[in-house]
Length: 178
Image (cartoon, rainbow, N blue to C red; front, side, top):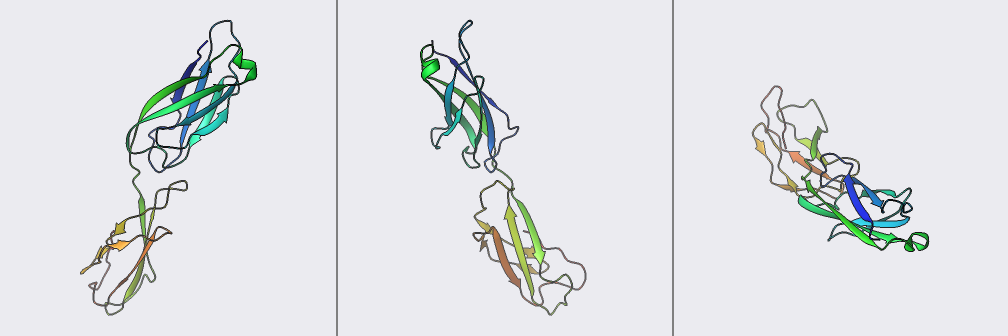
């Protein structure tokens, strides 16, 4: 018998920067035992994640970055084991899911919250997508007052530090944006 392999995405609104939880259900025919063995779950361009079946079900967490932005086909390959091999052949199931790019959070902090118009100001911008997201890459441009920075590369810790020169802000309350 070729069992049915069904995939259910348990993560609502999957993004590129967070893990995605997938439940795989393997079912045989009426009157046959519950399939045992394991599944390998992934995409055509990722390393599959292995998991053993329990009661014909396996839940797999695909790491952040496994699914790319756009339409993805997730594949689950069922591998029978010796007890189930008497009844079942190996089988494959697929599911298609649309994944969106994650929108990173940018936090800006200044070394000082009180300074004069003649002081330089050290500012750090931190880019993050959440605890399980990959480290952000790219560039950030800071603006505020009379100042616009050059595009600065995000470092390995997801941060950029910029020194804003004296005279860049008028007196009063000012906002720095990234």
